[in-house]
Image 1 (cartoon, one colour):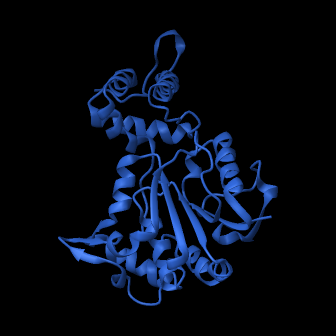
Image 2 (image 1 turned 90 degrees about the vertical axis):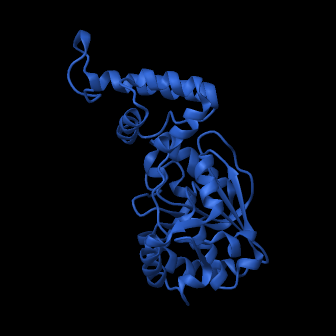
Length: 285
């Protein structure tokens, strides 16, 4: 099978250009069929991942994959991982979590109750990192976490909180760099070559399907952590998502983004102060 995107199509139109047209048709069809809106996702990232999907599903053309996705919901469920990026690790970018521990949580501790929204929680590594952070600072009993994602499979993984033991060395190193006060093993149960976090920590977490592209705000929160999600959106969708976070946050609430993300040049830049800019932590004005 020749690689999609190579060569020249008919009428002087390149295969890459045809592929981009097929992407637009596919995304429109998915929106009409399933109400999942990927139309404002960054095209460069979608190109790469959809070519991987073609190989996985044994399709030569994107139009063939579109036919299967629209007619076979079970295939669409399998393909969701190619539209959403599920790459994370616990306490990723440890300085972000250290800053939350040292600077943000002391402020949040002044509230009688706390709500945290982990938007785009993927398979849950960032979520459980935050829950551990709140547990070690004594705030967990009065905190509710909302963990949301558009991928049902990822949500199930996040809720289970099960990760291979082979990943725990990296997780533990990050945890200590983030200022962990004990051992990461204090927070999980080891079973069958895996570590399970959800059993002891999950009582304060609510999991829900939520799309930053189509859904609205569902609660008032004190902290939004949405890391390494906006980089896969175009500017229009970034503005929509940040607008949701702005609406959800209480006065002087906090927003945490990924290390390659920023509020600069967005429609909502003036609504936030970059209180710890190196860690991409902002505070609503």
